[in-house]
Amino acid sequence: MPDLDFKVESIQPEPYSATPLLIFKIKVSQRDGNTPIHAIALRCQIRIEPARRRYAEAEEHRLFELFGRREQWGQTLRSTLWTHASTMVSAFEGTTVADLPVPCTFDFNVAMTKYFDALEDGEVPLTLLFSGTIFYQNEAGALQAAPISWEKEATGRLPAKVWHEMMQHYYPNTAWLCLNKQLFDRLHNYKSQGGHTSWENAIEKLLGPEVSK
Image (cartoon, rainbow, N blue to C red; front, side, top):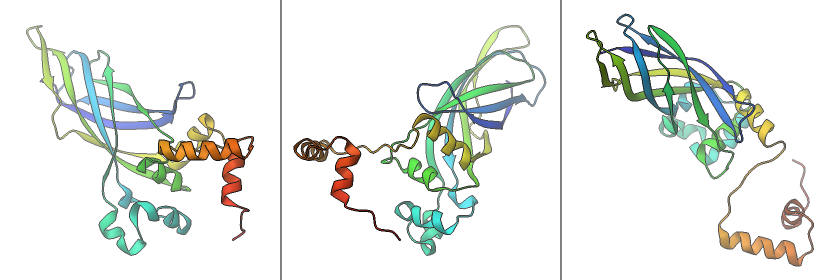
């Protein structure tokens, strides 16, 4: 049975996707020679490791909702599930590089969106946990199927700049917020009855003039 290793080669946004999408380039290598591999049904759990980086003061303020005060971070900065992703790896022998597409959301009700948006610079430390099924040819030439060993993982680092530039590309000068339907209906009525020409205009009226800090 092939024994595989995984390594994150790079992380780049896909500029021509309908929605925000990151492409993880995953190097897949065989430890035990060049067994002909017909395909791999690859699954991946991606986790963020927030304790493995430093945070500027401005970032600390924006992360309060997620992690509390800095003196609490010893308990709150824990490994956190970001997302699950999957792909089919084509036939190869020895080593190959596969594209792992990772869809991203800009919904600010999602904790990981708040986390990425709070970062000004630096990188996001990641742990990738792999699973799936290997379809390979044994020494007798017969097609076999075997699971990927559960302990297979890799680390990666996503530059915060890449995430911000991707969201700016898909949603220039925009942020998304999902509201409770009843609250949305109240806001919609306020906008209509007040004769406001846009959602921004209605919300600005509700918030009042901006106060300089």
